[in-house]
Image (cartoon, rainbow, N blue to C red; front, side):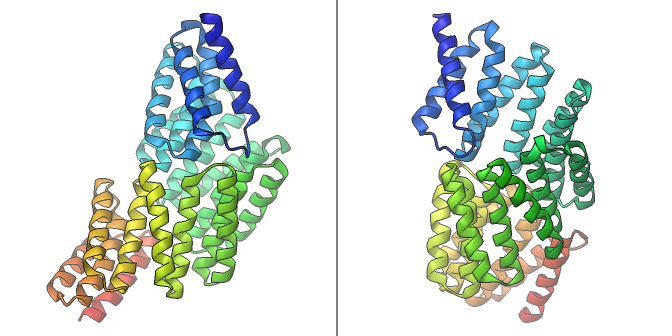
Length: 384
């Protein structure tokens, strides 16, 4: 029986490694690989192949959006290898779990996992491991608006990588640096980093990484007003995401396409695009982008004068922002709700929403909060 379990684990390890890159494995294969891990876990002396199999399965689970269950399973494996004093395995698993936690918006948990991984890599004297931990930490700090710290970490990662053997890691770090500039509205400064990321991904044959670069270029051109270029890049991103089986990131790109339609005033196409993305995100249990889809649908239904549906969408979005303690997005949704309340003639509700939004946003100096404060000031002028 033990030999059968080992042979099965080795078989699925070969399958998963062969599929690395751009091959889409059926759900049935992923379930079979997961069962192979569970069987190997029951054998005390199969620890090495168990975590190797988990690492090989990780990209598929992440791209398919099986985040909640996979995060819990990774934590179980981390505790198992920690008891076995396998520092390398623990560091590798921690970085993967950190990525899942970041995707789910648990930034505190992601920082803890990446810091723990970095300490282990430092103890192991692994420069490439430390560099990957730096880059992962930098991306989490970016998402928290700590741009200076994020940039220092990502540049330190590039110095540590610094050779041709790390093309995918260099591409991811260049992409993260581009987003640091992008999030601060420095679009021209972001483009060279995205161009280098595209080059590295093409040379490495990393099509999922290439999809992320196109996604970010699409959003950059949308923000800067070139909507035709934005749609072109976002459609390319979706193509490569689906080629690698990543429906979740494809849904996120569709949200951005919906934003283009919204900016163009094509409310029918915007509603269809947001609704399609919402269905995928709901199935995956994605709370961050799911709430974003509902926020955007609230704007669409407000403009379509479907007051009840708009109010329901905004309420669902607010529930998620508050449960996640996401102050900026809560204030942003409250700001949009003032437009809904004014449109249906409820001046008191509009003032209440605006004041609550201002209480949340005022006093903050992060760039996205400053931009929101300016928007709220304009809303207050219209309200007065």
